[in-house]
Image (cartoon, rainbow, N blue to C red; front, side, top):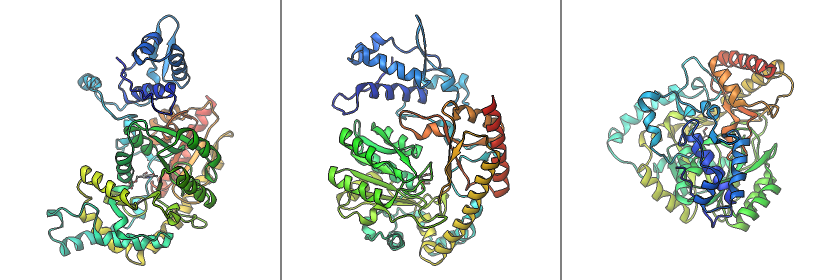
Length: 484
Ligand SMILES: Cc1ncc(COP(=O)(O)O)c(C=O)c1O
């Protein structure tokens, strides 16, 4: 029987809560292929809501492709929808596991498995290993083990290595952020920063506002805490403030999550005036801002405006800086900055999760951050990535059919493509996979009102020859797909 929790005290309408509950279970495999949903009458009775509420939910589920309604027979989970989410596990052997319920709200399992070796991985939002300081890291590992022979035999501080926190506090002066090393918590990547914030401050029924679209794993993380997620559309200057204001007044969010610089997935930059406005809203309505900033250093024209954190005087902003994108994803190092009692609470969560990030990799990246070398490295990345962006946008311009638009990011690593509304990129992905091409379907970047006519490609990960080849092939497949 379908188990859905609804919160009658929430400001989120019941039909929306029920819609999210059912669509999440369909995505996660919690409702089996072709399974029949309860009738409108039965579900309305079970949840104690009106028939009209459930009618509205089923209509929306059908419109979004989650279910098929057959006159006189009932409503069934749409197999096609699930087929695109399948992971290829051995159904005969492990099929029984579907009966084990999970609390992962939106399992896009396929995103997390390592793709085929020969894939053109336009989906990976990371920088090509060839552009990262590999030799430096290798030699630093040896050096660190020489200097700290017991480093792997001891726990480190939960808050993170003191020297690294000090170095990061200095590094962030360049961004006009002036904080003490005591305000920093070292995390295992930016992703853990988001998760720690969610598990510390977000519980069932809390409202989290995100950009629409946004980083898909952030949606999953907040949703996993039972949050109701409201998306605010972005334009070339980032999150639209008039819409945000309406959302704030209506839903009273506890937290707004933003990626202001070269936003994932669109590449847009939140303008300086909007940054200031967002902070004013946070002060007036007393909510938290989570500012996730993985690639402000990777700009192709001019540096983006200073972070919101740089003018946050009352600790409304928790700033996250991951080092995966620009230094070494395998080190799994990021930091978050939080002031006042927020940091102490986050520290408790960090202790609960892993008792501190590995000291070896914290020590290994330290000298790089503490030297001129980091600036040279960033310059090299800016140069190389700009060439790649230009190459890819040239190929798109020359080869894509009419009717498709894309962003030309002024930094970062992602291009966001928008197709005519009738083109579903989940379906295009099935075609592309056959030729070992992967991209990120836009549907995963929306929390609700999913738009299926977008996709993201990252121009940073593949070696240059493969990148060109992959994008040309991608354009061929798109052309065929659009002509079908
Ligand atoms: C906006 C954003 N935040 C956080 C992360 C997670 O990065 P990390 O590897 O530092 O955990 C990513 C990764 O793609 C990202 O795009």
